Image 1 (tube, rainbow, N blue to C red):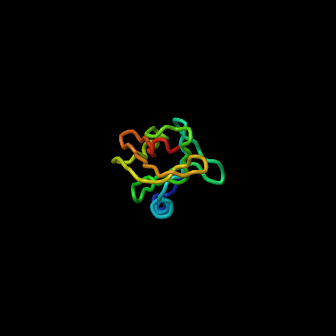
Image 2 (spheres, one colour; image 1 turned 90 degrees about the vertical axis):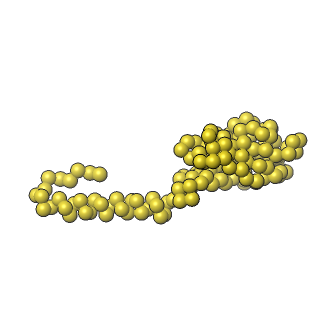
Image 3 (cartoon, one colour; image 1 turned 180 degrees about the vertical axis):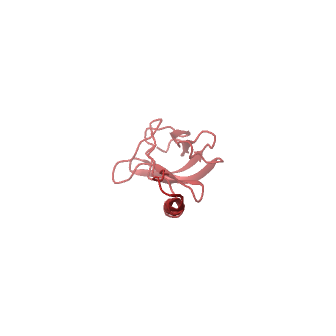
Amino acid sequence: MTIPPKQPPNAIMPWMIGSTNEHEKDISYLLNESHVSEWISPEILNSYEAPPAPMGGVRYRYNFKSNSVEFAGHLKVTNATTGTVAFVIVQPFWPSYDISFITDVSAGSTFYIARIYIIAATGEVIVFWPEGAA
């Protein structure tokens, strides 16, 4: 908030009202139009890799309205070991409870079903796929 220029007392009120209206627009934009964070491309760990183009690498963002993490992209597991940490979600976007869901992972030109397990206490994202599949 900027400090108003020196003005007679009766001119301060219109300045304050105008300033409040500007901030309401900012708040409205944040709450209604941009309710998600920017996409974050995490540092990939433990021999996981981003797949080659045209598939995009894994990324995530935080949805403030639903209070949840959203994921996009793919993860290549050819050189990785099942049950290891693929990446870590940055704080403050850690979920409030552990989350598990099913998706697929790439092993070259083949895809396998995988379980993604997110540990709320650390933000670690662990990937499980059938042993020996990749």
